[in-house]
Image 1 (cartoon, rainbow, N blue to C red):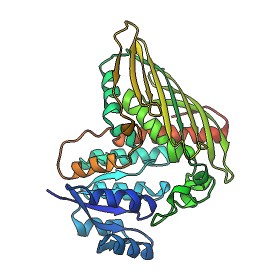
Image 2 (image 1 turned 120 degrees about the vertical axis):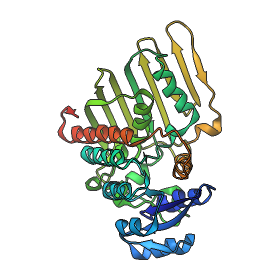
Image 3 (image 1 turned 180 degrees about the vertical axis):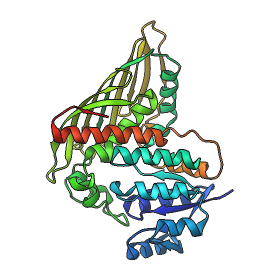
Image 4 (image 1 turned 60 degrees about the vertical axis):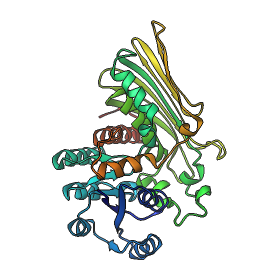
Length: 346
């Protein structure tokens, strides 16, 4: 079958990634778009040849018999369209962060269970072959019980979080708006904007759940977090060190460096050096091969997986609603801690 896909939110990322990637997939096609801005809706419809255009997600769901809906609205506007699409019978890809309040993340997860549909959060590293290998190693007990983790991420996005035009989007149909990325009142900042990637990977591979978080941050010129330094405890007692920085030079790009320590060994993941390694106390070490091409972040991977899911194929969903809800809980606590100067329990 060819899956029928609807898009909610027709801004920068939908037009640069979601719509072109889906339309390049043999399993799916975009048949409808939805946005509150009629002029933008019409511009995108003309650009991609999509005639079905809506300003109300419920009207789109009622009319279009959609297999999947992709949501790329601003961070704070994910929850209602995600739940509406699930209740309308569609699988949902909702951009990261899945939500910006812990209770909203849990509401989306409950709606997915009630509807019997999948939610997919496009934290692209989770969808790689080598990340699934790390999750398998840990699930099989190759490092014993997880007791500590170090989760570090850096991105070349100082312009974005400073409220300036993002350099590499100069020739895109739309550019990322400062109102989404650099406004502290609208969940702007590095944690919401980027650390959902690294935390999503950590929580996928380890299956940990955060219990409490303490965070200190450094601000951008607009007052959102440029830098984050946090410590956390998981419900199994494991400790976690979390770090994020937005001022990586543009020519260097994003890097994610995560180390997971268990009672019998450790897993090391570093996409900058293209390595995934397992070290055991007994010396029975292992490694997953990562090519230099695979190490470069690929935002199309989850979109292509979503197309196959909506077409009825059996797929692995390594960033599902539960993962998205746990990430949302962790980040919500991180921001509340940075604001209060106190440890926040989840």
